[in-house]
Length: 150
Image (cartoon, rainbow, N blue to C red):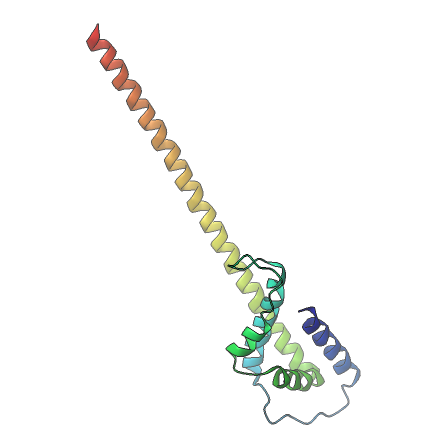
């Protein structure tokens, strides 16, 4: 998993070192917008490495699923990534858009968590209020029954 991050970092590093080198555009170059989507999902997949999935498994390799989603293979990604890293301005633009998307997704997730917590708190409060109301009513009934017996 971390190999991908190392490859990305090294490719950016080598791309920065060889910015004067002209790299031929690959025939099967991934378009910029798809590269943004792909890198966003790759970063999410990399972040999910230490989180348990539905089957309570950790260290699941999600990268093949990402490549399958976009119907590409790792060599096509590697060629496209190498090409874009040779063009620093393009790659910087791609990474900025990826960063914005990841921040927007995190904000959306945080808002969903806050909403779920609020709903849970309201339910808990309403259950507590209902229990208190039932308890008060049962006390009234008990006192009425005692009053009738006397």
